[in-house]
Image (cartoon, rainbow, N blue to C red; front, side, top):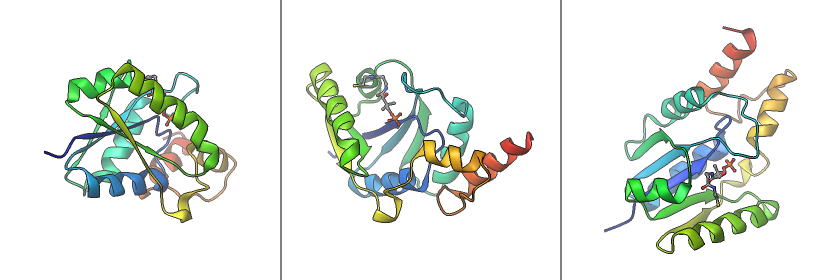
Length: 161
Ligand code: PNS
């Protein structure tokens, strides 16, 4: 039986790079749970409920994808979901050190869990949620960089709707 995979992250906001990783993961695993949480080292721009809404909207056409929140340790969440694979995206070498550390810590916490790294299409390697937030806040165009539903919600937020 192929394992259930969890793709965790803060997704603040979700980008086309995240969507690319989600799609690639669905080609490898029968069920992919996109699990949103707050990163203890970052102050969030969007509340969890907005991130959930944006991700559900942009993945609604993919039946094997489920989007949820989680809190606490990621390995405990995987156990609860009977999942044994963590998906993470690697955009560049600069991501590697942080990802390597997390993967080994998660393995230390639960030996039955493997982290699988996927590389997004090279068109997305320079995109990050923090850059999207900055460009959008300063009036730049983020149209080709985030899913349509994310662009719309970000526009609404800026207008204060
Ligand atoms: O998108 P991000 O912000 O890089 O995601 C980081 C995230 C949320 C995957 C990481 O902070 C995490 O797993 N948090 C849950 C708490 C936890 O298990 N911490 C130990 C990780 S080794």
